[in-house]
Length: 144
Image (cartoon, rainbow, N blue to C red; front, side, top):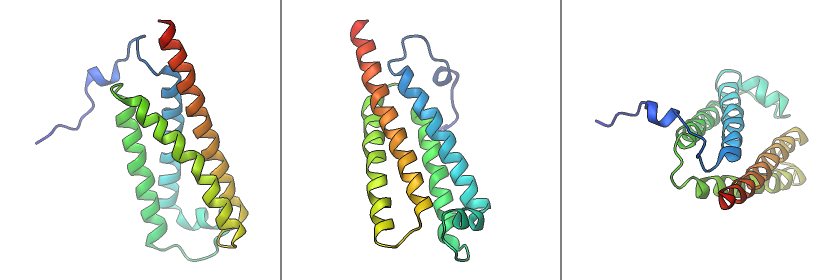
């Protein structure tokens, strides 16, 4: 059986870690996902009302919370490794830039209220941060 615990080697980073600025994004994104996940799991009615969805919470909103927590676990685990991380970070930046497009479209079609669109632009900001951090890290690694 595979041991999924976090080893001492994974948690101790040296100064040669290739993506220090991008790693900061991972930390912020993970905190955001954990907060969103716990909120959807434990307080789905509050989250739905905040987003302008006035319906009784059902299992769907709690399942979304579970998915956010699963993603946060993936971010934590991948943030502890540095092998092949550039591709992962690039994918997260790309997908984050698409979210406001979808949420704005949903708003314009009348499917959601405007507060949900704010989350889309927050995600876009995180995506831009990641993209810029990747550029900074790449320039930094070329100098070394």
